[in-house]
Length: 291
Length: 261
Image (cartoon, rainbow over all chains, first blue to last red; front, side, top):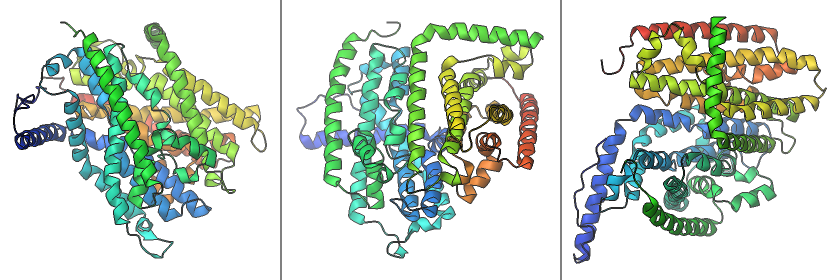
């Protein structure tokens, strides 16, 4: 894989007028996304498999739908369907894999040429992730369509007895919620990945740190059905904000919206500062493979 | 006999290589414990307001979780390390060297590597299964574990065959090396009794991706609730899929052209 060409080298040219800088920046964003999107399209088959590999919410959808149909739970069967469809959707957009890329680039020494770019390497990963999300869209929409076809009740609201309609203002807020959830997840993984400057096999650390993600994020069960104490404990971890919070916004059932955004923002700021601190230390410590 | 000797040598070498990374073992033990705790926590959420998941009492469902954990450990120990290797060999074209060896290729590819990382899962799974069996209504007799062991073995054979057949696909589609990962994710459904799923799911998990035969049926056998046609069906299914994986590998090899040729 050859690195995409750099279109502008004067990123430090602060003497340019602000408008000019903005144009340069936007052009760079466009080029980056286009290049990485083209790259990702080549891996369509794998991306389809990735959609299946992240199908856990759909398995849980079946279980919770059946359970809510047979007994009384905090959510009605149709609300369960919508919740897990939203979880599946959010899950597709918050997938992060920067650690694989970064660890490999460190171990193989490929990071070195990128350090010479007039651009922080983090931007390449961001672009790759955003393009991969885009390449995923048709696949997961197809899967979601299939699920709705299997369970048409998902679009029917038993509480009001009419078709379900999203609360549009919550749906709008879901967009920043999903992307800040993604950013938080990305920063957590990227910060752990920076450990690769010092130790090998950082992935096992990440796996360990993310274990509670499976059952505290709201992927295995909506937090509404947690016992009160477990719910409180979960809300003190960053995990529910990666899945549960955006998913409830999508379905229009969110409460504590301000608190949710406040917590995510706090995590993002903290992680960002930590990440930059470790990055600077790491680069100093880094002696490239074979150099 | 020759193959048994080979098998022992393979495993000896693998274990020796693994012990170099002892800290990994601690990691994977921690990993297994947290995952199991999470699974039990999730299962407990279904037992609110008098609900019983799929009509299974708590300790019965716990047996399913235990059997799944055993199967997961088995897969980590014996299947996954080999599966990743097959796709790697095809991609790099080094499969040629394996084909030239005077050993059955499928045997070599299936048993060459062994990883100790699955051991904590196997032990934890056995522990949970025995614990749950003791607290069932009525408690299980030791013979129940012995009889239940047979369908567990059949489930392992089934799991192996499907995994190997999917891995074989990489002979044609080199880029499909994520396919076994996708399968692994779908297998997660086996953590819960099949009767807890809606009808459409049950059909899929019985006939298309036969998860029902891997955990639910063995648990039913242990609990003495199995219908014998299903038991026989599971045996036939396992043997047929094993035969299929064998035939499919031979068939795929005919169109193997090695990398870059």
